[in-house]
Length: 323
Image (cartoon, rainbow, N blue to C red; front, side, top):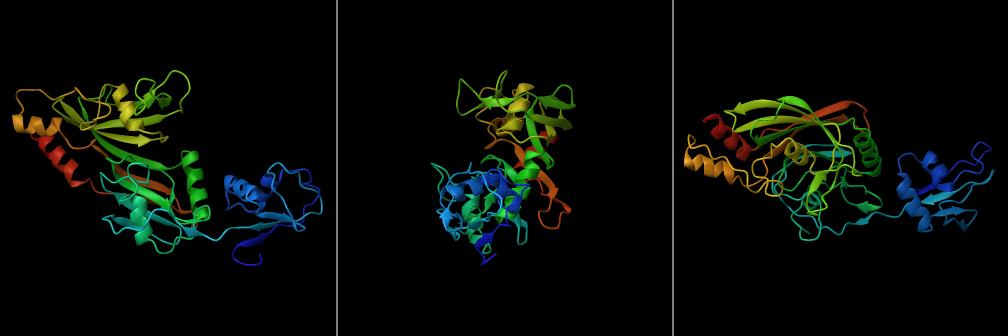
C-alpha cells in the first residue's frame, strides 16, 4: 500500500493466471465488495504497468501486478440534521439506533430530509465512507411507521460483513405486532414468496410465481378477548413488508395499517366506544422492531440489542388489556 487510498496486489502466479480481474481483486481485497471493485475498474482506477484496465472481464496474466486506487470520500448529498434519534450504541464500525415511528430511513423522492440518514450524518463524525461517499451504510430498513432497532455501518468493511450476515439469514430479529383477531394456530411458521402486487404497486403480496422466499416464525403472546392479540415475530428472512404481508395472509392484519387493511374494525358493543375509536384509528401500523442480534464486524463476537416498547404501543396494549 502506497498511501491510504492506493493499494498494490501481489504478483500474479500460475494459480491465478487467466482469472477475471474483478475476481482476482476481490480475493486480494476482501474488505471491498466485488460490485465496488467493478465500479472502480469501470471508472479507470485499476492500473497495470501504467495501462488502465477498464474491462471487468480482463483475464490476468502470470507476472502482472495491479494498482487499485480508491477515490477520496466525498460529502454525501443528504445534509446533516439534528433530529431526535436515540442511539443505543456506536463504535468505529457500527451505530445501533432506536428509530422512532414516522421517520423515513433513507432519503427518497418525497422525503429528501428529516430522515434517519440525515440524523446519522449529524451525530456520526467518523464516517470513513461507503463506496467512496461519506455516508452511513444502510444494511437493512424498516418501514417509516415501524419503530425499533436498526444497525448501520460506518465503513465499507463493516457494511460488507453485515450485509453477508443478512444474506445468510444469520441475524436475529424479533418484532412485536398488535393484530386484529387471534392467529390460528397461535404459534407457527408462515412461508410463501413475497413479490409486488399486480393490482396495487404500493403493496407486496404472497405470490405463486417469482418473488423472494420469505419465512416468519410467530407466536401469540397475549390474547385480548379474541378481538385482538399481541404477536411476537422472528424473521428468518427480511423482505419488504414481510410481517404485514404474512400476518395478512393469516387474516390478522395489523392495527393501524392503512395499506393492508382499510375496512377491518373492532365493533364489539361490549367495548367502550371511545376505546373502539382509538383501536380502529390507531395512527400507524402497530409494529415494533424489539431486538436485533448479530456478529460484530471487528470483534467477531455476538452482540444483542433490545429496545423498550414505544409509548403509543404501550398505551394501545394497556387499553386492550382493559377489555
